[in-house]
Length: 196
Image 1 (tube, rainbow, N blue to C red):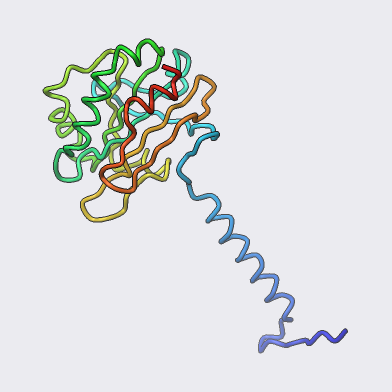
Image 2 (tube, rainbow, N blue to C red; image 1 turned 90 degrees about the vertical axis):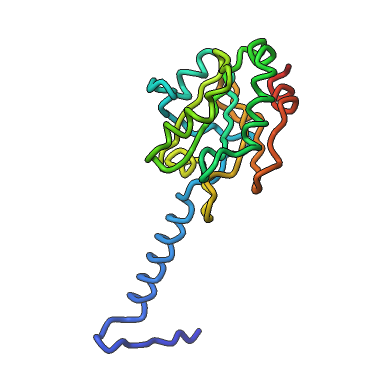
């Protein structure tokens, strides 16, 4: 079999150039594979630790010791308080007794630019009676969203509104990710995933 050979102006062989090409291709592929992907049913939920509204730490590993976790990613503050988020949170809170019966904890993630985020979150919850099993956490500058690949990179956007149910073993048993402002998980869907 004839194999053509090429020479380079500096005297290096084509094999050396080809090997560099292969190495660069592998590096690019590895970088692409390392990029976070949104979790799906059957995945182990990526660990997280965020600050609650009162400044306390909220860790997934700690929450799972008590029971399953319902993780709800809101739009936070895209320049205004999202009316659909308000409706969704009210619906979840109205069913708090059923979430309690499932021994679950609901974590509501409020993302946005770090500057002023706490004040916006305070405004969001000011007229709400937050059940004890619900935790509002802050995601300043979208660090959590990026780790879950849920950052909506567009003008006046923050996140892809999403809901996950994570069982006590850390497995995702329900996932719904909306690529619009609507299309949110309903409480009944979430409770069904919890077996309630």
